[in-house]
Length: 187
Image 1 (tube, rainbow, N blue to C red):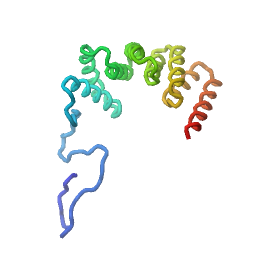
Image 2 (tube, helix red, strand yellow):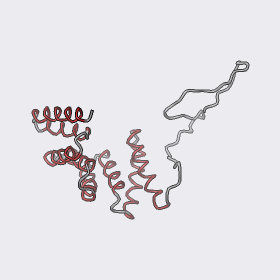
Image 3 (tube, helix red, strand yellow):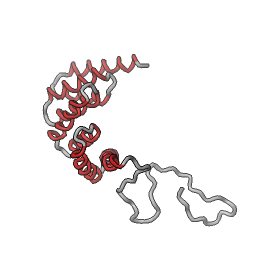
Image 4 (cartoon, helix red, strand yellow):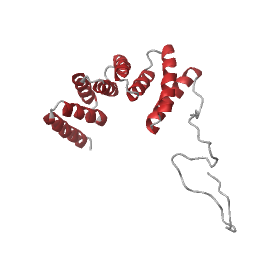
């Protein structure tokens, strides 16, 4: 907890009980972008995990610097582990955010080869296709993602955007109804 200076409180305990999402240091200029591991993983996984953490934290915090740092580390890790699904996914997501959808799509398609019946892999490939302008291919991947996981809401949202882009408003409305029924069946 942050210790604050006591002024006139007699026998009062001066403890700041505010809980912050991202605690800030009281010292000016002490803000750091470096991530620190909470436990040491196996030596072979240290760089990989740190790189993935930079990409994921960069995405969450909307920090291009962290995404780029993580991406650079992941490209080094990929040389040693070219079939690591998490590494490929991280590279693809970083490239997608970096406005390189065709390169991201290559990474996502490799993940799809390694994990063919995975809804998240199909969704990533679909979003990569959508961002690169391959709308028909995007629809196929996103429909497949929803076949594998009927409640993959992010895939449904992307597929709805595909349908609207294609001018197929009936399909978009039918998709909304399909998602509603799927959610009701799991109650």
